[in-house]
Length: 447
Image (tube, rainbow, N blue to C red; front, side, top):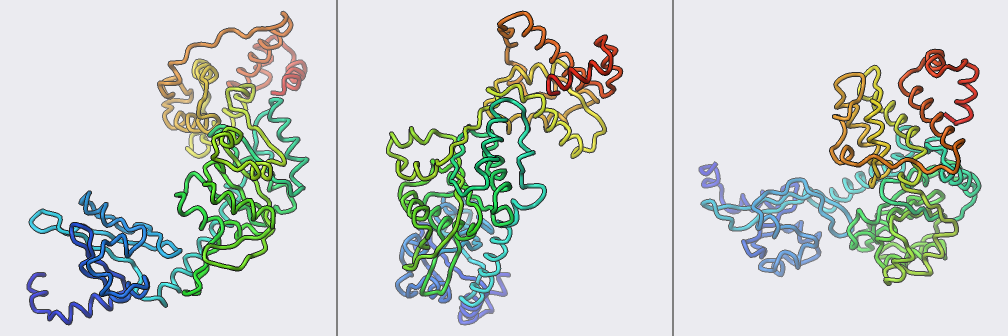
């Protein structure tokens, strides 16, 4: 390789660097630009003679060249948000005699024509994925997918059925892992917007400096470039704003105007666009506390909480535990290809006594792992995480009278037998009941 470059005139190397299907930049160990090709400069709208010698962060936004020099580790095919869009960038440290002397970076586009074509194709594809990902049979949840017969869950389901046909904004409150998106999708699925887009955005998952562009879009007049935001993608449908409490105040002000006026203004544009969007928002932090701390606008709060749904944590709805556990158990038995699995009585006891700080999502993950770790047809406690087995046994329930205690014991016995045995005749014999009496009690206890 060395001999090849020795025989190449400098003019040839320059032609290669200037006409390759990529944009290049080379920096020294202090992150000052030593070389940058002309096409990259044209895109960045900076004269090359002014770029040479400048700190790279002053010429290229969101650059990570300094991180590569510091770590000495190449960063390959990494998303790079620059001038309103994501590109793929490669960053490689340059070494001489084992010492880092600089870094080399490239972006996988050659000129504006190629960039616009590929960027437009990528944006169109990503928009289609965003619009259809939650519409698929596997990913989109309906009201019947909400498991549980506790009073709290029944009440929430009834409320959803009443409010879904309206365009009322809904604030869904609940701890992490309670399934807030499931409830949001259920509302959308029962509304007149059911066949229209359900678009979601998680405010906590996107850097604050990029969130406004993601929600409202970007317009670059000089480049005739438009990136649609989630608001526009959700037009005529539903926008689900998850973790809205993490939204910066500046973006909150713009969101308030969008809700009030029914129009948005993309970054870089001076023209408003009319949008018809229903807002569903979710938070795992009490918004009232954020308002007191000056982190959330009170006027926006009143706009998004025309209806508030509070999703109880799993520890407050343990009467739903059996149905949830059995649902996840059957789901992962099918996925694992195993024929039959049941929870050992001690395993079930551990699970029921645990406080579930991660709520339904944690239960789902524990059941999934247990299915794959089970060595036989019975899931023993050895398949459970240590923190679940370390929880002490619950104290006995406090009952008002003897009849309540008998009812509870009867329900528990029938429930356990139903889980371990599918033959109702066998269960009836074990309990000393006729089959008709057993069916009556199953109905009575909603099992």
